[in-house]
Amino acid sequence: MNGIEQMPAWAVALTAALILMGAAVSLIGSLGLLWLRSFYERVHAPTLGATLGTVFIALASMVYFSVLESRPVLHEMLIVGFGAVTTPVALTILVGAARFRDTAENAADVLDRDLELNGD
Image 1 (cartoon, rainbow, N blue to C red):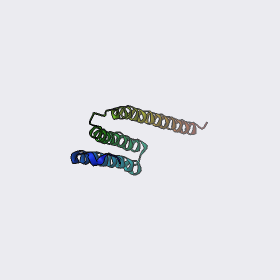
Image 2: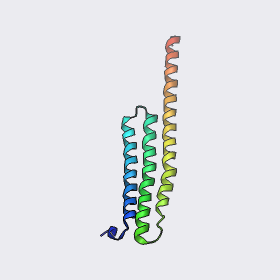
Image 3: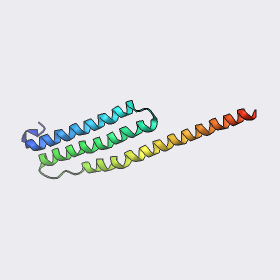
Image 4: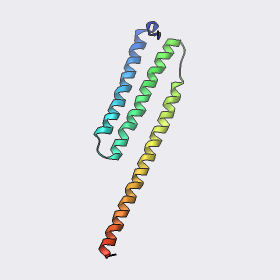
């Protein structure tokens, strides 16, 4: 038994709604990864989906266990906090590395064209 039988209907409905919203946002972020064209577009959608999806699912967990245990359960806020900090940082690092790579490739192409034009 998981204790859901003792929960009020409003808490069960709120928990279910938050879980469904979290799953939907995560799914939309995953689909964005598949459908968007460039790397820079693709990296953005899953980041938003992961962050907001985690928030909704953590809120659902907070509601469920707070009502079930008759006391506030807030340790899920640590999960949300760490996710909200680390996910955008990882996005920034990935985009910075991709920009560096693109700039280096573009510089190499320009250098190759200059060498070809000069006959070297």
